[in-house]
Length: 156
Image (cartoon, rainbow, N blue to C red; front, side, top):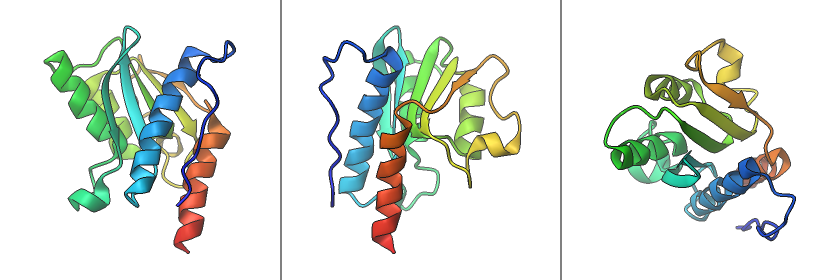
């Protein structure tokens, strides 16, 4: 099992989106260590991580235990309510239909993902996010993509 290392986070050229995507990648590595699909997610409010998660579908025997769903639950508990307005979701792989729907209901303000998911990604299915949600893709795309691609290559 390969653990992916990332550059020094003190690099001056690192954007806020890259900084929090690196946190999501750390969680994806935790999923990898547990032989879960390596996807990680963090939710940020006012520059602070208020929710985080990684895939737990195998451990929990639960198809809904995606990284985003874990992070939504943690962030909602932190906020004391179900709405995550003025929050940003960072996730290493483009959300699926279920997770995009959950972000819609949570009214999250921004979704930032690393690697696109050409097979199951929400962008394939039309407008699934809340109309006010900003979507940004491709942040640290190569790192995020390599992690998932390597996982599935090793499964074959």
